[in-house]
Amino acid sequence: MGEILISYIKRHRAVLVAAAITAAIFVLISYLYSIPGEPVIYASLLALVVLILIGGARFFAYFRKQKELERIKSMILTAQCDFPNPSDASEKKYQQMIDILCEDRRKLVSENDKAYTDMVDYYTMWAHQIKTPIAAMRLMLEAEADAAQKALNAKETKKEHRLADQLFSIENYVEMVLHYLRSENMAGDMVLARYSLDQIVKQVVMKYSRSFIYKRISLDMKTLEKKVLTDEKWLGFVLEQIISNALKYTQKGRISIYMEGEYTLVVEDTGIGIQKEDLPRVCEKGFTGFNGREDKKSTGIGLYLCKKILDRLCHQIKILSEQGQGTKVKIIFDKKKQITDMA
Image (cartoon, helix red, strand yellow):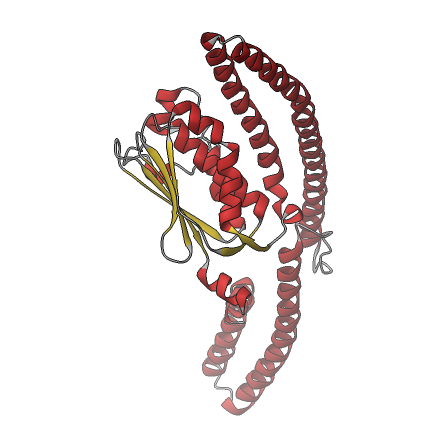
């Protein structure tokens, strides 16, 4: 209210100045010509009352227009621009220009939405189609590996294992593409319920069992006797990214998975760690840091996706690390949300 009143006064300051000058002229003429003060005061009071009535009526109309404009402003991105009646020709022209801009914006939004939908459809189709040759390659590799093992050809068997490991990485990158595309519309693909954390983690560990064996990394997994309110598929994907990173940057030692307190899941490795200056930015989109530049294969997407997904699930991610001392990734489940759901 106060802001609108100040705006109204500034808008009509010329009229107020003119009224003040007019009143001063009345007083001056009355003084110069020795006119009795009573009629001058009476006329001035009548003029002031008329001015207040007209000003009040105009202020009320101005106030209603400002409120209407505030309403339009709050919904201008989703609705047609329906302005109040213009008070003069200039205001009408401004409204016409805004209508033209609104129409152009709507066309651009529609074109961008269509382009984005087409892109998502294409890459989703591509990701699903490429799974067929990947599955065929895996079957061929498994057949070759079995033949090499039967022939007791250790060299060939080792080569098949390396190829299978690379094929597994390709499969994970394809899954990352699908999850990246779906992450923009997670709400339509989430099923929130209370899931066994132990079961989710075991499924992920089983998927990466070949990598643990091939790299000779030991696993220290504690029993996770905890049910959490989450989405099984999306949380599983996050854990896949975290364990994949742990395996990628751990050349020897072990990966430990355990609970810290009641609502924090920890994945800890004995890998190369992360530089202190890189830690605040590891979850930024496209940021690879020193390790990523050394590895030459890092995309800077994995941890970005993890944080984005966990934010949508109302979980938190916290990363602690020292270069050469390993990395500890914590997934913190919202305690208040978990307790409220249990109640």
